[in-house]
Length: 160
Image (tube, rainbow, N blue to C red):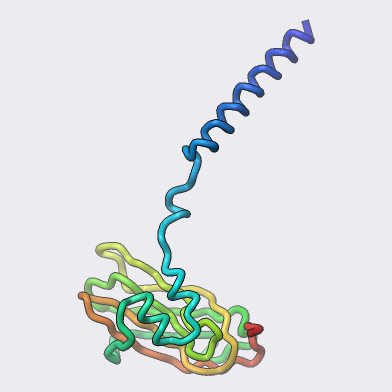
């Protein structure tokens, strides 16, 4: 009787494994959200104007006092490998927030697409190669606005 139970377990396992293999082979288990389009050219750009052009289609944004950008601890980062960046704005109809560091080998650090009714807020940790400016570009109401802050990096986080 023990052989009969083992045989059933083996047959059930074989059937399940072949069903999963067939589903994977036909693409039914492919995660669609993970394979969404992303701005590869923008993240690969080595100059800030090229990154902005690839990401947003333009290279300039109007300065705005309505955007608050903070980085590190009071503008200083002991380790450039993990710098906390916080971008916040009360502007209406914010659809995208991008964070750039012109001093990095690849200046685009992050791009956040926001849905309808979302608050103009983004927070992340980034790597910085050296001290310099961090620039936040906000797309609100179809227009681009920017603000920046200076960050002093004690120990570099990038090896270029």
